[in-house]
Length: 159
Image 1 (cartoon, rainbow, N blue to C red):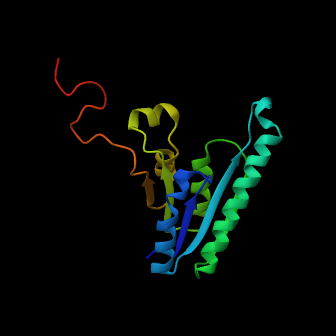
Image 2 (cartoon, rainbow, N blue to C red):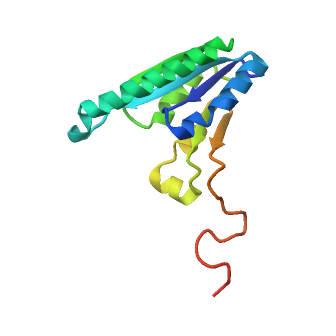
């Protein structure tokens, strides 16, 4: 069912929530895993210093270790790093998925409300819009979420 799966990861805790799903699907369906990490070209000169490169080097090293751990479990896995990308990262991940005819993409989410996601630029929403295949979005279940019909802020008592 899922021969080729793309895992969009920025190395964050939210991305790491996907790892159990990646392992389970890889083992269950004998899927090939392609981990895609996008390093954006930063336009602001002050943010281009050595600390940014050191952070990305640590992130790529972490993703290489996760790739190796998947291989040790018998899951064919590879890491695809896109450096100096411009535009939104989701478009680059979707392009990779399209070029390899992926059956599924997986990404993490911070679990923001739709309004704040629209204002702040939700990666998962953009990936859904650009995707050539189904997308599994893994949310952090530890933060409380409003239920349908419950007010997001303020009192539950009408004014």
